[in-house]
Amino acid sequence: MFNRTSTRVQLLFIVWTVVASLVLFCLLLVNHFPADIAWKDALFSGLIISIISQILYFIQTYYHAKSPVNFSNFGLILALTAFYQVLINSAFKLVLGDERWSQYILPFESARAYIVFFILISTSLYWWINKNRQIQSQVQQQLIEQERALTKAELDNIHQQLQPHFLFNSLNSIGALTEINPKEANRMILLLSDFLRGTLRKDIQTLVPFSEEIEQVKRYLEIEKIRFGHRLKTEFDIREECLQTPVPPLLLQPLIENAIKFGLYGSTEEVTIYIGVTQSENGLQVEVRNPYDPDYVQYKTGKGFGLTSVRRRLSLLYNQYDLLTTEKQDKLFITKILIPQ
Image 1 (cartoon, rainbow, N blue to C red):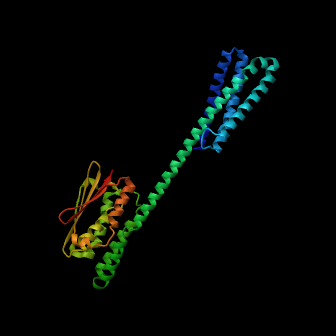
Image 2: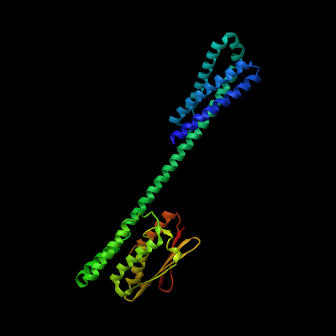
């Protein structure tokens, strides 16, 4: 970045020297200066203007004022203009002699000072705008990086909270099964190990094929089926074209956990959890249905972290706030999410 900027600035100074020299040469010819004096004056003046413009550039690079019009810049430009005048007068008095200097250089002294002052004012304004744009770009980039860091931190925090109740319930179930059904307890330990391995190795911001997400959901359901036995049934309706669609990992498990919580905890009957997935123009449509008892739900004390976490993750990842919706139909609770593609 620094090398590109330095090269661009050096090229700009070269172009600036050539343009300033040509303009001054034409101006001197129009004012009836001899050609030999005009080109020497123009070339020497162009070089001096280029040098003092670089001085101005480096000063403004390391000292950036809040406003392009300020006392410090104004005083610096006046000082550089005076420096230019002294240098030009001294050089041409030495080269041309007093007579020709007083004949050609001295009458043009005031006009030259105004021209150089205007050039330096324009240069100063250009450098200030350029520097200010760079600063704003850096600030914007820093804000973007901070926002990304905050988003990642929040996603990581959500990730760490995803399965605490499920894990505790599974461990309690394993403890109970150890005495009455050691074989099922051992099977549950193996399933839980596979599920947690798939969970812990995921980067919550990296997309995975939907087929991989479904496999993780099925591991979770196998564990829950050991807990609830024949009472928990599942029905999958997933279109083939959806399986390779990239989705955020560990997105469905909180929805299924929520469905089991409100579908089975208040009932002693057999309950079917439906998971349907279709592809639309807007993205992947996922629908989870579970029966629920309104009277039981009314007395629940849970805070609904599962749906809240999924809604928050989707808003952080896709910057949309309506990707998760819920509805109730005849003792059926339906959760729908849209995963944009």
